[in-house]
Length: 249
Image 1 (cartoon, rainbow, N blue to C red):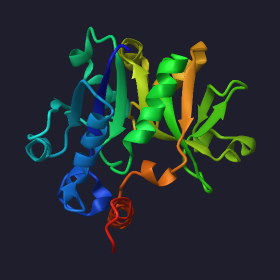
Image 2: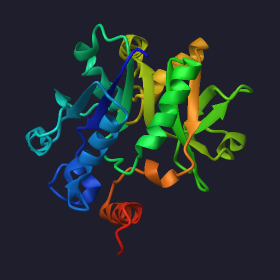
Image 3: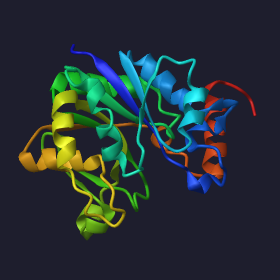
Image 4: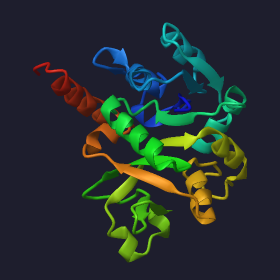
């Protein structure tokens, strides 16, 4: 095994939280939600954990200074691909794998990540992504697999013809990449979209267009992959977490 490091996206504002607090610092059962993501990264044996910070970075750094993490600043929020590219200097000669987590997905469990790692190590693709099945996948990128079960395409909702829209398996934004091909490919992604941002899934699109092998692991528990974007979702996550911990409501 060549080693594993984790990059955590934690630069966002979280406008929909209706609060001045950086999104990843909103408390979940008394702890900032970013702490649960760092827990998961540690639980799968990450050699290095890098937080990509931006909005009110000093607050995020202060709230996590007791953890074994490094920081990279994304000065302008130009998308997830741009965010991960900021860590390149830390992984210049790194031979291992890079796990990419989101600081606002605190319910993700180590067992799920270990399954992702297992498939990645066994199949040896350039990337392995976590997927979920949703009854109503509207708005999400759909996963199209080939006959062997590898990823043939990720089709965004706006580009999806009716037969693709019937697919219920979606990309949830959790990835493991082979380090060097990732950092070689990130500078190639373009920002020719409405937001003018550089998106990490575009790395997968480049790989797929080249005919590279991309694996996908379906999680049976869609709730653990949910990002927290508003106060209602935060409250829902608290309920799930308490049930998981056996704390009665």
